[in-house]
Amino acid sequence: MSAPHAPTPPLKQQADDDNEIHDVATFRDAGRNAVTPVALFPEPVALAVVNAFADIVTRAKKSVAATNPDSDGIVRSQTFEEGDVYMIEKPFDGFFADRYIMDFYDVTERDICSRMHLHTGLRFVRMMTGPDTRIRVGSLSPFDITDVPGVTPFHPATFEDALPDAPAGVHRTRYNLIVPPCSFVDMQIPRGVSHQFNAIGPHAVIDSVHPEESIEVFREQMSGYKMMAQTVFLADELPAATTCVDTVTGH
Image (cartoon, rainbow, N blue to C red; front, side, top):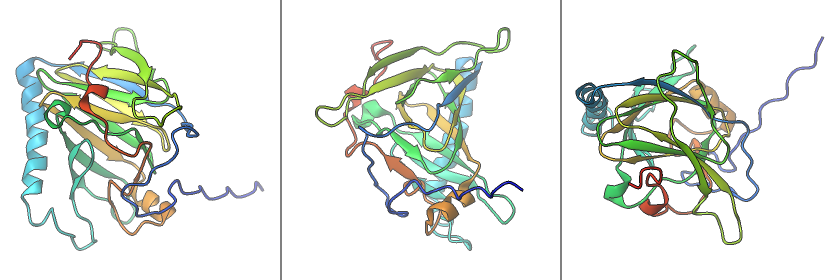
């Protein structure tokens, strides 16, 4: 009989800390993010889809039910660094996953970018853009990009730069990928793998599945479901927008 597996250790030092910072100089990704281009759409179609998802998040922010704990203590409408989020589907006994919709902030409007971070559990995200909008995705590891001839509709632009908010004397390469306007792009994010999303333009949303949400809360010994608490940041402060604009196109 094989020996039982040791329990997976937690990633966080303080389970409910909304702003836990880990040392970016010593951090190493547990794997790589996998990116799959899905589709390109005409501008009116892409705009209609993105606006429909964004409207759900907007309605949730105004909802008394969504902004207060439900019978399970879950607050569905939350805020994260990249935008407002709404837990459209929640976990329940026998089903450990949930689903969030995020309506991105436009980094050029706020003049700040989100920080590089990682999560306490794996994530699946579908990034969706409308007209005149791109999403810049960053990681401290190269992306694995799906390319199936005859099926994959396009290959996203990629480039490298230096992580802009690293401490003095620390150099980390940042790997970047651009989600183009009017497209769907999927990303599979393993637990403990760095990433950041920043939208350049007004029309960008994410449909995000968290397949082990209940397991994360139990494993990390958290007191509840909260996006910020399920996150580990790799920088102290949000950097300026100039550090995450699209350097491929110059915007």
